[in-house]
Length: 159
Image (cartoon, rainbow, N blue to C red; front, top):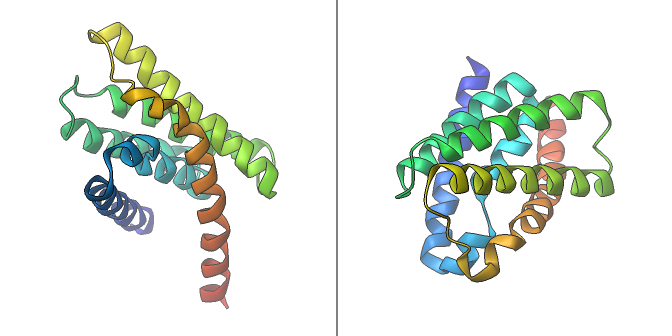
């Protein structure tokens, strides 16, 4: 039951942050994909199965608010959540440099899958004036900042 509550709170937090970014700036919203950051970090923290389930849920939330084909983001986020959990169990990605590279690659994988699926199943995808290409770097930067904060909070409450 605990991973379900954590997942629900993660989706709610990502949704609130995305809504706040939408009010601030649309180009910023294109650069920052809060749901992808949440999926990668959840897979890293909880494991591949929970990462895949949260990825599916986050992707379907994203798809429900977009005008594209329903399920494209769900599929891309599911694969990203699973692989982030799986790969993080096989190798140490916790040092800051590795964490930045790992989350950047996972963000690029998510974006690449979404672009590929959009190209195959729809007539195209919005590039957002090139802001979309900055998304993996911004994802890596956000995840590299958020993960150590999560670890500090977790160790503080475990004492």
